[in-house]
Length: 157
Image (cartoon, rainbow, N blue to C red; front, side):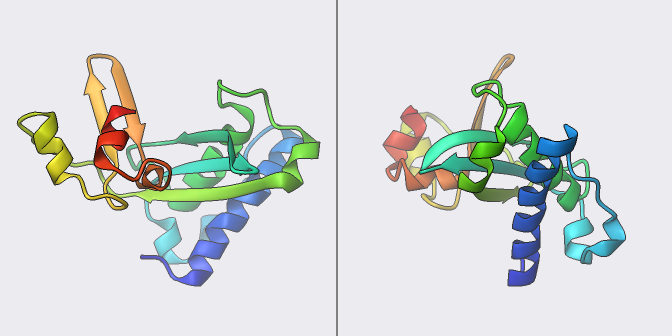
């Protein structure tokens, strides 16, 4: 969907936002006009940080409400410093980070009859899933298929 230049730009923004956060305690400030029109569109993203294939932080938004480049900068910062599952990132960890950015399409209802119906309709590697029950919500990005390749595993987790 995005050309290689835009993909590299997004990864650079994520990395620089974490670096900026280490020094300034806030996300990298951006000037929208510096980026392509595609990167200025409102989009929802998740930024996942890993060290040696171990999760180090993951934060994102499900609804598009700000420009893509800003969403990536804010979510990269939040993944590094505000993910409640981890202590804030340290300077010594910065060079070990691997970044993954998921740009989401708008969520759509996925009507199903039961779990068996869901398992037959899910498209491994393509579909993400947001499950809601009252105030509780669970999100599985399409990238989760890499570690849970079978629909049964994906839904069970």
